[in-house]
Length: 147
Length: 212
Image (cartoon, rainbow over all chains, first blue to last red; front, side, top):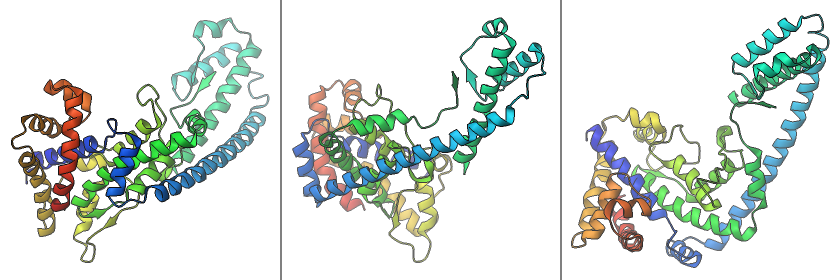
């Protein structure tokens, strides 16, 4: 069988199973009846799926809390590591670093360059610290996702 | 405000937890039916996939904790209901155009001599699979490829004497599967399309059993 024919068969099988698996035109009872005809114990299967859903929801909540805690620790560690690091920088140096970070597209702050120039050096240092911390957290998240 | 790259959106999880048990039951029932048909295609490839496993994996991905850290964010504009959302996840997991290999449980029917392993990889490797489809080489692969080819011929036999059903099958051959798209393509009313799909569903069950 040639590649085109093989691909066409896969397209057909996908479209066929997609169309026949639809149930927009059926009531819930009709769908259940169809499943029963296929030998599915609908009520028992649904109970199992709902239990699974509850477990997954709990797992997801736990992971979310753990991730939030980890992020908080990471943020605190990053902030203490940055303490005073930019104090001796000129406003131009701080601006340049901020622009460099924005250009790297690692993170996208919703602030324009014109807004930046109008800010005081202290505010810019504060923004730069936030950017550095966000960048570190982002790198950490990507490392985690890549595992 | 600083935004990171796209990642799992926790509001999806919140939206899922807001739904009532009745809403979940309805969505899971309909998703199970969809998964049953989608699992059928693996049967033709010589694999057993439990529809329940597909639904479970879809739920896990919706909650952001799918196999291999996979997840899906809920685009409510595109998929207004939970059923739509779960079905779209199952579709992407089982579509031949899926981009990533899947990790839901599958049991190959024939593994003793290892000959089905290559086909299994081909069947599950998603987009890469589509680009890299191999010509069947072993007698077993040739048999399975022929089964897939015969489905098209059998579908046309089913439609003999029913031109409207024939039109619906032509749409399926072109990958058009949404009833409203079939209606637009064929000029048939949506009601007629649903009727034809019901007929096809009834007759195709026998067909698919004999094809596998």
